[in-house]
Amino acid sequence: MTLLRASRIPIQRHVKVKAEANPFDPAWEIYFEKRLDIQMVDKLKGKRQLLRLWREQKGICPVCNQKITQRTGWHSHHIIWRSMGGSDTQENRVLLHPNCHSQVHSQKLTVEKPRPSRGV
Image (cartoon, rainbow, N blue to C red; front, side, top):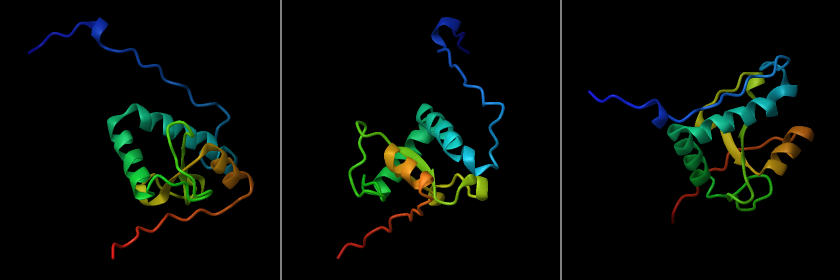
C-alpha cells in the first residue's frame, strides 16, 4: 500500500452549470456541446473518442470539407441534438470547425456522418 502526498494530486476546478441553462431547450444546445467537449479533452476516454471521430472523418470537416487541425480547432456536434432526444454515442456525433458549428446551428443546417470509403 502506498501513501500519496496531497501535493502530488492535481487540483481540478469544475465549472458550474449556468442556472438558467436547460438541456431540453434547443437554444442551449451549443452551450452543452461545449461543456461536453471540455470534459472529453480532460479525460483519456474522451480523447480516444475524439481521435476515433477525427480518424473516421479522415480529419475533414463535413460542412466545409477542409482539414480539422489543432490550429483550426473543433467542436463535437450532435447530429440529432440532445435536446431532441439524441445520444452521446459515436454514431450521433461528428467533429466540425467552430465556425462551421455556429453556421449549422444558426442556419439550421443538417449534417450527415461521413460514410467510410471502401478500398478497391
